[in-house]
Length: 254
Image 1 (cartoon, rainbow, N blue to C red):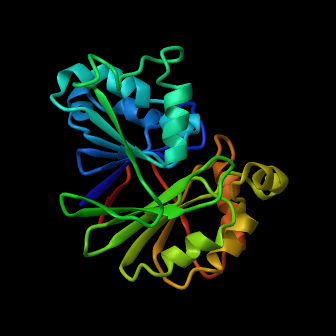
Image 2: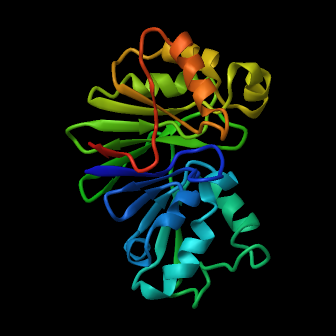
């Protein structure tokens, strides 16, 4: 099982792409601007999109994805998200005002888009791959995801601030190999991180103090122009672990 990073930045500019991860060839975790680098052939075989939350940097390419390849497919694209996120997508994106409602196109019996509800803690299996939503703490209803091949697991936090429930869930994953966790702001912006429910290096250090396992740790959602500073501060703050900056195009074998 392979996970390819299509985008992992907190913004755009130059070669930066926002959050999207491609699991094997057919499953997306979030659909930020990184999806736009895929070919039509690659997009056409994506059958499932698991959405952490409704913020634009995580869903920007979702409407364009279904519009671009929907009619090339013989089955609907399935969006997996919590009830709250599905409601937001239906009311504010696929509403005929921002974008067509592809759950009704070409008709209700043969739509290009289908919604499936997920619940934190409830595992879904797709071809031997187990995907479990994890509790996180953000300004809109959100989840992270555990991706489990059986041999190993990777956890992607999505967007979160301090969250004891997340670390309790992570500490139960005995085959955890990789942890991708966000750190959106530098320490100088700690107040903004708290208000917007993100992490900064000092908050990250506090959160990693709750981790009882020893996975490889990668940092995502770094803001454009601040990545080097934030990673330097993480190196100074986080003594027990040595987190690395997540890179666009990076591939994880799970």
